[in-house]
Figure 1 (cartoon, rainbow, N blue to C red):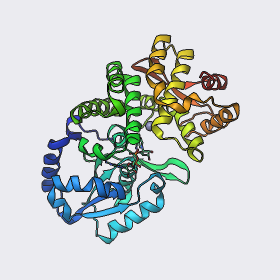
Figure 2: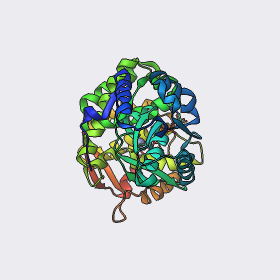
Figure 3: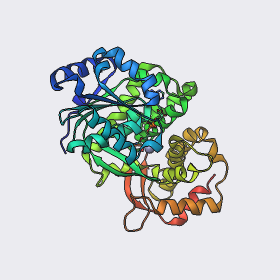
Length: 359
Ligand SMILES: NC(=O)c1ccc[n+]([C@@H]2O[C@H](COP(=O)([O-])OP(=O)(O)OC[C@H]3O[C@@H](n4cnc5c(N)ncnc54)[C@H](O)[C@@H]3O)[C@@H](O)[C@H]2O)c1
Ligand SMILES: [Zn+2]
């Protein structure tokens, strides 16, 4: 897999648009060959910002899909491919993905298969997109209810991170991105974790000013990118990014048809439960566990209702079907201390159950 230097790969705020303009002038044959993929919300909120910064992009082809996870499927891909065909996309065309994780996942996937591969640029517009979904070379779509079952590893030309987009993002979406940022600190950078804990102590509703966001986002991206670059195809180390997600995904799936919970809330809960398991079995100190719990516990009211035995059994069933399992064992990534994480940890069922009964 061809890697790019981090400085060439991520471009921030104002500087980013100059870089993009320069790239478009030198690399793209014709403006007609540029396609911008948006959903109906980023069409309204984000496309005008992109046009404001680069006026001539108004002449490019806009492909608009409906917003939401349920659009991340093969039928939407076909619809996008038909649009590319209709507007005469060639192998020299460029796709600009302007949106959250759904848009960058599906746009990246289409870019990887249409005419055996077009170039693409990610412009994530959600916090989760900026710090997680748009980085790491994974593209993908869901197969019915199985998340990200079809996909590819495919490298964008570069990414543009413009924190102006966050102004229209609802708090609940900001929270989802923050969950991954907390995770990044916990698995590999204690200093960053400590800085993150300051945000929510000092700021109401996690709203911090744009310059601060840029710095936090930058640091969070570097943490993920560094891990991905050491193990792009998730053979080993990259698995630490799944910390909090084994239980988190099970909670998200379980609550999907009931009182739906956001990915961020599910991950925060997953981090707390998996930190407790880390304390029990992986050497995480009691004081580190307490620090994690006391920081994150107030952020998820749902956890305060005890999870019944019946639900626990269903959660275990969901975890058994996680595609990251090997040899029929549920795989966890667990903390050794704040800032250090192990992967491929197999945990007795009894301990997973116990973690749910802790609260
Ligand atoms: N490829 C990866 O490595 C990876 C990693 C993590 C998550 N993901 C995927 O990312 C997806 C979740 O990403 P997401 O949370 O960004 O979802 P999303 O793309 O659905 O965005 C969330 C909501 O915010 C709206 N939105 C986007 N930008 C906005 C803005 N600037 N202002 C107002 N509203 C805006 C969207 O229209 C949507 O309604 C999932 O499908 C997940 O599987 C992929
Ligand atoms: Zn996540």
